[in-house]
Image (cartoon, rainbow, N blue to C red; front, top):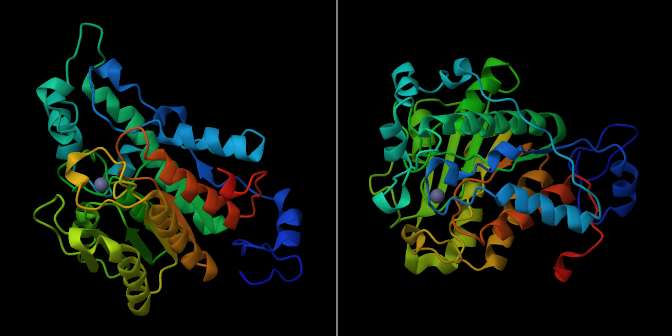
Length: 348
Ligand SMILES: [Zn+2]
């Protein structure tokens, strides 16, 4: 239920400004954030110097804990198993991840970005931490089905194909989560709402013939990949249309929801359309922080208002400032889950 919680039935998604309900439910709230310290991989141990914002989850948790006046609790995921990975990826590809060169290709490490020293860890060991993040997307999707809203403070590797990692994406955690939910018979109909700057091409390719999975991608028309796949619904946004981004996003969601009714939504909340993103390739969309905040609130509210479970993942976002986008998004998700904050959003 959204608009009212009759009797003793659990209220999964809370409307805003229902303070009396919020107060009652705070004590009953279950954890719906997923994170592990393994998300914050120290890339310098591998000899890598690239602005992957792996500390985003840590920064968001720290800031939200300050807002709440207490340490914010989260659930730690188990690493995804090889059996679950093979629901999406080929055995040959998985084997290829034992080779350092595969990682250099996937992470697009240029000479000045990869200088391994004698003590550096071998690149294939990166897979251990990525498996944990992938397990995080599975857990967040399961929590969303149980509680209404959940977030993996990482993940969103939407470019990975079944037989090839690409664009910094090694394992397609979104596709693995969908197939795992199906295998566990927890849900049958899924919608991917992918608002990363880049098209969700890996996910689109994986589910192109699956009528039970609707893939919506709102992305930069000019941005990588040049050769795009066919999602169930693609909304390319030209650089000259940046001012229409929010309108196009809402129209896309409304259109998608007219033709498909999902049991659960996986929201790929990439922060790379943000103007402070440092990846040169994301220059075509430069949205202000307030616009990014409106985007994420729009998506979370749209599905929360309709009582449709939603699992959010972080996805793209590069440099020291993108964590702010995720901070506002996770805060909204927590508010809609019944959390209260000591400070108002305006005081941040
Ligand atoms: Zn991206």
